[in-house]
Image (cartoon, rainbow, N blue to C red; front, side, top):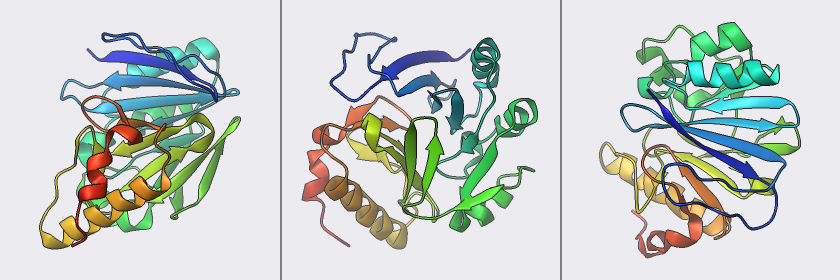
Length: 222
């Protein structure tokens, strides 16, 4: 069974409760977080009657219940990278609720290796924006964990969905010197361009904020 954490976000400061369930009171964007049995974070985003998912592997039933209750479908099916654990539920969600499966072109080869039959409906590029309700989701290419890893940044909601690029007090697995060099570049890019007050919705483990990840500034470029 998945557990989920629900957030409602507007433009100002937030309130958070300790424990498994936290709420951020603001509007414009509602974020629901589902934790898989393997500890992966999965997200449902909703704004002004439109919805998108990020990295959904197991939470299709819970997400479906929410969408059915609201009477809405999916506009976008997003993944931060194409490892199997990030996309297992997407085919079923697309069949039931529609939506455009978005992928960076550098990640297509890995998608084919992940034994997944779903084909991208849209190849996204670095700095491209996806419009969801009242917010824009900016795509940021953050190679390192994989060649086509991306983060999704919602400036209006002060939210960054970082996948396995940035974790709380760390970063995702790298695969050798070239992978490490790319990861360092991506982490530095995020540190320099994403405001400190931004909440980082990680791909696994706890959430964090850019301001709490100052260690990135101490990293040396490879």
